[in-house]
Amino acid sequence: MTLLEISPGSFREASIPVLETKRLALRAPRLEDAKTVAALANDRRIAENTARIPHPYKVSDAEGFITGVNKTGGEAAFLITLHDDTIIGACGLMNQDGTPEIGYWLGAPYWGKGYATEAVHAVIDYAFTDLAHEALQAGARVTNPASRRVLEKCGFQWTGVGLYRIRAINSSAPIDRFRLERRIWSALKEWGRVS
Image (cartoon, rainbow, N blue to C red):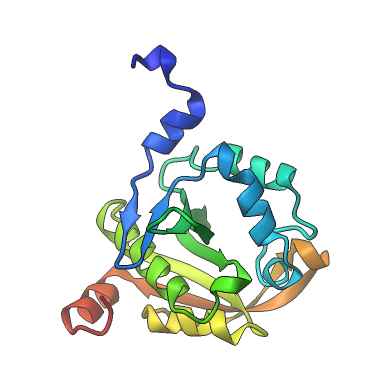
């Protein structure tokens, strides 16, 4: 295959590695994933707990997400899949005010199984190891204790409360803000507190 035969989407996909964990593979989204992503993300509970997911979430929204991600250096979007390539959610990094921010969501059938924590661990390792970031930030709606728990299990430390615009509710909502520094992540790994 020559460079002329590679579509722009394929090139972007090739620039994002596949992150493998014990139960998951995180990979770049592909246009053929749009229907599955839309079916999973079209859940008001997911949309109301993320900043950018609208509700209802249509196939065209998923296509816009897929064609718009992984274009900027230092940013990365992954679909979270089981090892049989079943898509269960998404996780990624975006640059926000100089410190990259991690975000994630899982389809409701996959809640409560530890998948979010496992996926976030993989993206944190990627951010600190491959992308050489010094710190990450994250947020969780104050009404979403499960997401807060994922961040805490990954070593994030609470830094305060802020307001985020939530697209699905067309309003702002209070968000618990968190931060994780590379040195803390390294120490937690060394002590066996995270894997």
